[in-house]
Image: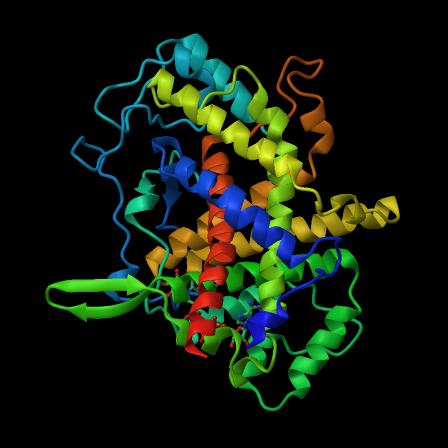
Length: 436
Ligand code: FAD
């Protein structure tokens, strides 16, 4: 099986698959899962009702497993805890805020605090964002409990899903303008023969490290979604029970069948590449989270402190990983060209996060948006090294680097998804070897 070919060194970095497997599955994954179950990390604010900005034909799929259950603003058993406030910087100002006990509508206690928060928000550097941040003040933005809406098989497929993947690859993968436009792997399926795919990969080989990295991140995200939907597949559906679990033949179909034309291992290696990038970002973000003023505020001070310690423990572990991706290799060339490339990548990433508003299945849209925002936040961290080093304060008195609650939740949960995918690969390995 092709999974056995997913071994050894990864391209563009000094790391190997086996080191990541051991590090993730035995050390990091269990700690991360515990943290992601905390109230702070399970609630994600997202606007799932933004219209698709690219095409009008976006009929929402009626599949029952595509539905998302948002938190209701009034208290009930599954409702929002009272720490949630409408401002993304709430955790920073938590001590000074008066939070209404009934949920969503927290208010600031004083004019002074409100002004400070607004100023701080204004200061947030838009230019360094790699993806669109949902307007958290929009009446359409809602909190979603991620544990109640797990990413799994939804049945969303066919031309609509393909159109999304196609747009992501075609519109954002730095089409070379001087050579004939190559077919990408997504188009390839609906086209004929091997030539398209061969052309695409030989084009990819010729790309600079940044463009290749960008493609590999998107492909890694795509692979991660395919692993998840195979690992939490609808195995049984009758009137008294719906059973979810790993579907090894679905996995094989996606990574080891004739349909993939041998691309399966490459796609899984892209998943590992995505893991390395996000792991590196977590390691780099440590000084931000270490600030004494930073809290994972939910109003339960002891719990909050415990969760902050758990988070720092995970980030220290990320730092201790011996074979980190060296992101200085990216944008290292000529200054002007590097700046242009960085901007190209940033804009393409922004575009991808807008495309997520065109995903017809709400559950897929939720997790697609979260993972894109998480990756965008990881890139923001990686390219803000100087600002993070200058923490806690710049000379103007403003923090030089800032992450909103939404970005923090997205970053950790997105990494949680990739970490789970790597762990699921281990399960598929055993399942497939049992079948042989
Ligand atoms: P697709 O996965 O749709 O792939 C289309 C084509 O892209 C393939 O034919 C192949 O040529 C190429 N390709 C496939 N994988 C890769 C890769 N890793 N790298 C490069 N090229 C590749 N479905 C769910 O059940 N649950 C979900 O949570 C879910 N979330 C989604 C989120 C988003 C943002 C999108 C766009 C789709 C989501 N889907 C989800 C749908 C799912 O991704 C597939 O589109 C669907 O299952 C149909 O799969 P497919 O085999 O036709 O190929």
